[in-house]
Image 1: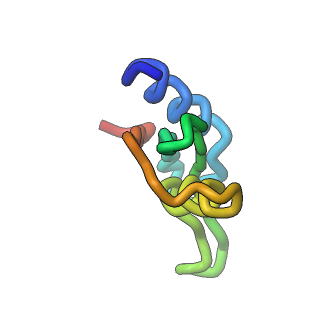
Image 2: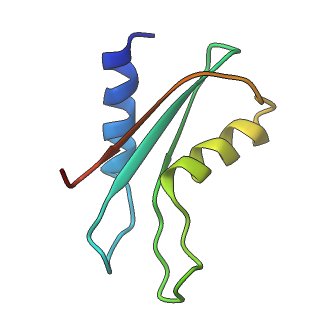
Length: 80
């Protein structure tokens, strides 16, 4: 998995973000030591603080799949 491929997967996850309030979309992709890639996007809630950041979403997906060791991560946002 190249850095470019990992960034591309983070960008695809960012496109699925749910950010109706801030319009600040974020995507993350983690390359696990097992060779699998785990992705996540931010999810906002009307209840402040109840949202989920992209990095935590990706980590939760990895842990749920049994992965706890990571090689690389890519995080991308819709803003500079």
